[in-house]
Image (cartoon, rainbow, N blue to C red; front, side, top):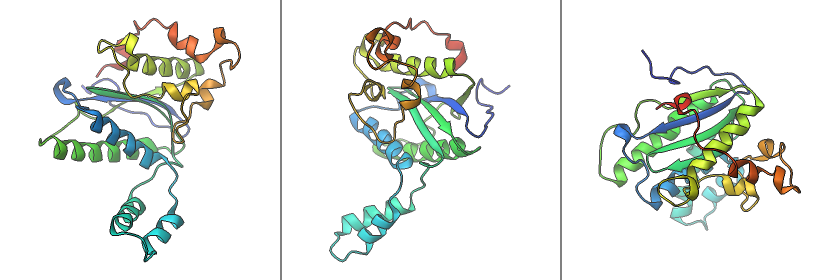
Length: 223
């Protein structure tokens, strides 16, 4: 019998909670570089590609070899900025959560396949290991209403905040983008924030997250 949430129903315009963890519950982020690399991959995949600028850089005789090589690699890299919107994320030592909206019916499947393969290759090379990194294929839960959209962003951010995890430190996540403390071009909190007040702290997104009891129905998101 397939593991829960491994059989996926994809729809155009669908909102999905995507998550996975390391094989045998092992860490998939060992140091700060690992987090930075994964985030950079998200940025590369989800930021619009300036193809004309990259071609110009590659053809410019004044460009260095390193610049030309970087431009060539970026030109050949798959890009999902027109198909995938990242609404929220968090990266924990042995797992990650993404909240995505897709415009095409198979955008998430292609995006996650490319991201998973690429990060596994990096991690194995960087940490001198071989074999699978993740505990099976990624899990995907179709979110079907606004209440679920709001709740899953809160659940994702709560996991990463120091006061709510056992590691007592903040892990990389999109919470600062929701608070207006950071503007990440490839993170899109606007749709969720439209449900909250910008002037009344009692009705703010920050209060919404702070008041959440983290005893969530974990069975919904079994690994």
